[in-house]
Image 1 (tube, rainbow, N blue to C red):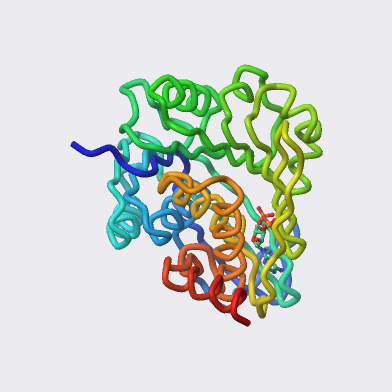
Image 2 (image 1 turned 45 degrees about the vertical axis):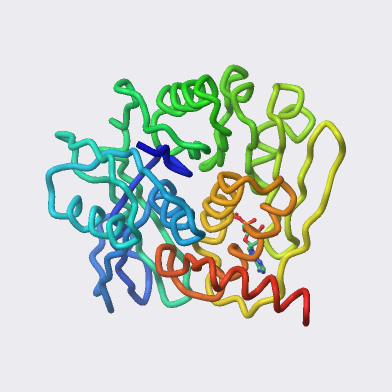
Length: 290
Ligand code: ADP
């Protein structure tokens, strides 16, 4: 069987969101205004981003036996993603989010099944492996090492930020932190010195800096009407993995991903905001000819 373009090993959550006029104090109950459920988790979001960017994608994760599992399977299927979801005794991961009138969030993330994601039985063959840090670090390290040995290109989005062991950094062909995460990880020079092949720092509306031993290149952000930046980082990572899998060099691939990130800020939410390849190439052409 043909290998996949991109294999994502990561988290899948159901985000449950209550809006209210103000946050409850400890012990207090307040009236809510509205309730919504959204698919989420950095792994799932990035798998959708890579698929919409044009890749054949496999997603390795874990869910429970609850109805949320079926909701997430349907989300993956809708984008043609091959789901390799293990079923665990733990509940499907949840993010419980309260949003007040001022747009202020408070969030409780319950990893649930995500804490049981394992690659002990191996991972599907793919040109590019993409991981984040919402599943156990031992799983991330085993995935990256195994993919490296199989000749794949390895990408790590180190989010949420955590200190990372040198043996994991040495397995990263490309690491994609945001400005905040790169500082927590010890800075660009530390990451390059530890063996990361390239450090791609996403800087929101300031675009992206691409650092390698050969120097630094900058890709400008695209000017768009920003509605909601949720999912922009996930759009960037999924689209970058997709373009690297298609054989594009890092800087043009990062330019494509920068366009994907910009488009994701123009639509609310994470999964609904992930742009299709036609929209991404449309923005690139518009910018070139504009
Ligand atoms: P994260 O969400 O992980 O913090 P960033 O905020 O750096 O990541 O956003 C990821 C990418 O999305 C950026 O590199 C850029 O390409 C795009 N992006 C984010 N915010 C904007 C913005 N305000 N205008 C244009 N592009 C943006």
